[in-house]
Image (cartoon, rainbow, N blue to C red):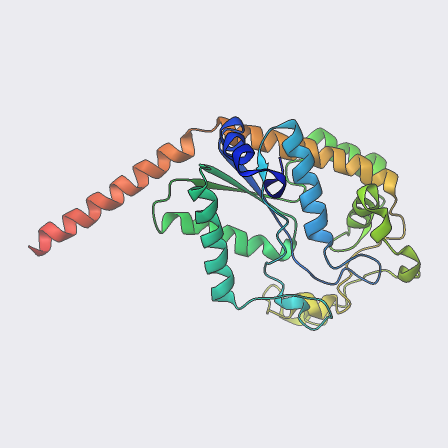
Amino acid sequence: MLWEELTADEFAKAVVDCGRTCVVPMGVLERHGPHLPLGTDMINANYVAARAAEREPAVVFPPWFLGQIFEAKCFPGTITLPPKLLVELMLNIFDEIGRNGFTKIVVYNGHGGNIALVNFLCQCQLAEKKPYQVYTIFYDAGISDADRARLAKEVWTTTDDKHAGENETSLMPAHRPDLVKMDALAGQIGSALGRLDHIKPGGTALGWYADYPEHYAGDAREASAEKGEVFAEAMIDGLARFIGAVKDDTVAAELSDEFFRRERELRGDRKEHKA
């Protein structure tokens, strides 16, 4: 169920019918080589989330394009927000989702640059007691071991595929072929330039740009819609399983109650000691 397509009355019923579970697909607007659209992460994440929510009922939050993408500020079409504003905005979005009756929020992250941000947003749950729990999962992390082995053996031709490479370039034409411009790729390969290899194993904020200044990492030449359909099916199944596990989960809320009870007791002990 797509949040934005429900009437207010349908929405109130959907919250209950889906076990008060909301999925937030997170992407960004960024360059994806010369051949994929700026919204690739957002478009793919929303597609997988919507399909997964058909199999395991949940309400899917409207397509979200704001995330951590400072490494692409030098390219046309990128949208970024100041760090504090971005974190505060996302935390308030979670609160609004909770205010609408959801007790479980699944952040389905479709963008690698969001990983640290999403993990931090999740950890913020321990700063203040909330009436909801936040769960996170990244891109293809829900794929089963069997499906992953099958994809590696029968589908993918490369293991060096980080951004706008074979799997993303296959996934997009599986559902939005009109947005893929393979002619613009002109046979290019996104190979790491290694311009900051001399400081490994450390790094800087320019690590990604140092390796991939054209925001293309991998080899998209062997991509196809047929491969994308197999990949998408595995991702959709994996996310649906994860949503089901979240809906069945009772432990996270119990642990939250326990954690904040102990925190209150600790604060109380301190106050008594001072008195």
